[in-house]
Length: 57
Image 1 (cartoon, rainbow, N blue to C red):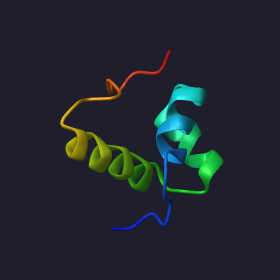
Image 2: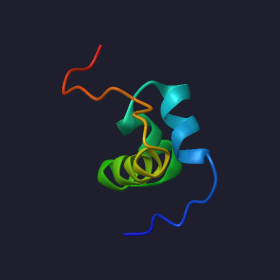
Image 3: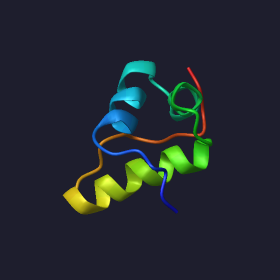
């Protein structure tokens, strides 16, 4: 699956908005695509950038 986004936009959107869902809406992606995009970067870097929970604040 390729979201079509290049660069840091998906990760920065999550950091700005504080949630994967809000970031995905901003970028016009599904929440799943947003999560997969960030997960690919995390796998490439070998570090976890965001802690994921099922709870919202």
